[in-house]
Length: 498
Image (cartoon, rainbow, N blue to C red; front, side, top):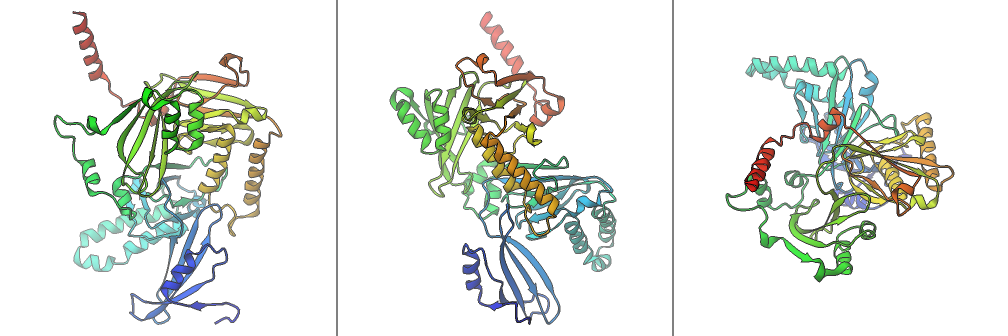
């Protein structure tokens, strides 16, 4: 053994305590473990490290000196993210460079290739740090392993697998175009974006709320009746939420101050303060729901408020007494607008940074001076200020685009990211004027005017536009069928007239 390389042999408990500590200089730990091939003792090495602008990970590598068996694994040492993530990478044929993109696959992630009707479940490939090509080639090798035995027992199945392996290896070598989907309910998986911090036209990232089944698979305590209730239909003549389960508190008894406190107790103070600048809630309703983190029963508070120059909105806030998780949502009220809306704000002074901003989950954000564009759904629906929005964008880019300052990153790309961060910070220092554009296909976003009369604010402009067929398709509007509702509405009006 190299004398300069320190290797500490300890028990498993000591390793767990060491990797749990917040130490930026964690040493390499080694423990004896059983080899599953020859049943002799081998050595497993643990190293706690951090991928800059991503998360802490635990690298483990096993090696058996008796039979030569070797394997490695990546586990996440940090917390499970509030929402799951789904990465979709479109890879055209002949693009070998795209197959070299680094991929962090958590142990809870599923990989899918729709063109081949192929899926790699979480238990098939555990946590790994690899590339797109590496993951596909590993899957092909694992399918090839028992082919000789299959040919003896089930020759038809073996032949079908051989034909499938040809297609799979064609994708892994770049001969065929395919879609690489990485779906992780824990939100800890990642696909490299070489164009970061700019958007990648081939890569789509979506975040979603986990289902109770996914919560249970991640180890959260989930009420079994809650899972069964999702599949059970509402009993005939009954309602999903009975009248006595919904508690209504009239505005006269709760008051504006108490209403402010009720919402603030289970919501961000910034959101509560921003909303109550306009109007106090006329009615606060409380109804039972489930926690988005641990799926335990909790209460959700909801009220409707009206924002001048905008529309009626529904604020929902919930707090879990079991795990302490807090969540707030802002939902648009009323019908779906016929047109989309594009909001343009020219930011020139400090007062502009303090303007209230409501960004819905269907709105995209653009800053032309930085060539920055965030697709709809990237930050979700938030209530903040212009300054807060830029700060959240910076934090989101750092979290989503990992490998930013890794050892394998070339100097050109590293310099590009550093320059972008500097330019992003200049927006908040107002060294020069810049433009913020919110493009919302459902017109549910809003930027507060600086004057009492919206028309007198020369720095703020609103533009309505017709949605394209693709936008309606993405929002699910093309499939909406209201014919039965229209017939019922017309028949009701006819009866009233008679």
